[in-house]
Length: 489
Image (cartoon, rainbow, N blue to C red; front, side, top):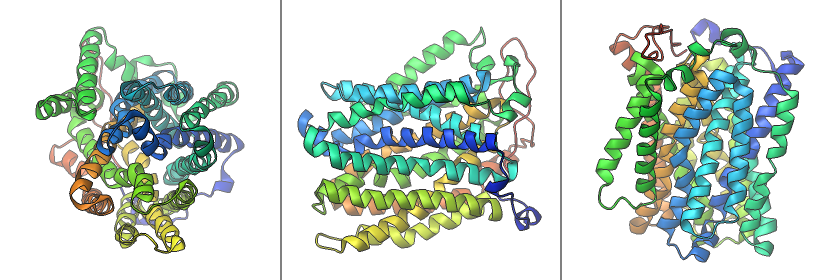
């Protein structure tokens, strides 16, 4: 979705030209996403401590990282539909409350399954926060700045991770891992500020406003579909829990097929005739999580178990990695507005390969400073470039279904993040954790670069003769008129 050559040559508007309201909208969303990142990464920091207390091996403990991904599709769909129907701001508030409460509950977990369930609540909120915050900022900023809008926004996530790493360093050695989760309740204070202080996104007000009949919720909750969609949700949720808790009882392939069919059924409702394009976007995101989340979820474990780092050293290493992620997201946004989204995305992915393999070639006794430099550069180019992903996905959807389209597509694809730690831990049993992380991330980086570079979702749409601005949600059974779907830019 690169811009046209002529547009790419024009300098995009600067941050200084934003209005005070647009800046407030951004910083509020940025802070919400920072706190989202803080709450979400806590489990990766204490995975070894939790495994010890609950008597879990690494593979089983890694499913606790996956637990939040299992529920994200539902959070993206439901909170996205709320954002499309009632506005982006209410969806943001609900999302913040959900991931805050879920995180605090993790501190009270009494065993594996209770912690799995509470992590799933965190996933519901995180999914809603991603979709609602990204759409809120994009629809509050000029179109020519939307790569920067998402790039700058996603820089908040690693900053939250840095704060979590420092909190781990200060709290866990003295008070234990549970107190790290208790602090997760703090973000609720932000929801009170959002409720009172921020306006709604102007583009949503202008194009949707009080027209409930044109949004995703009017499709998913149509009288003829409510019961069926509720049953479909229950079946899908059960299948995913069994799969990612590693309790499929030998029915894993069948449960996987069932889950895919259920996702297709929801995609047909959300995207109408363009549902194959939505599935292609989900597949792209799935692969993107497979290159990024083996490292994001298991890097702390690698530093502790393979390199013998203590909590302070782990915290320092993750701080440099998080700074790289944050800086890379901002640079990706700047480059994306000037060079085009796809061109910048692909360039960043291939650049990340230069730093990926040296990180996991280091052994005990290697230079700590060298590790910091490599982690910073690797995360700046690989994770940082994902700051363009919301823009890449959102370009496929018009305003009235953008929150649900972005939230659902991204968070179904985010199941790659549930597969990633399981795959990394499984491969590690044969070749070691460091090599498994490098191999999995390297292969999937190339796959994503090819998918984005060749513009596979858009090519699929053209092959199916889905014209720009042609289709979206299949209307309710009563025969409500269908509207257009935005073509990728």
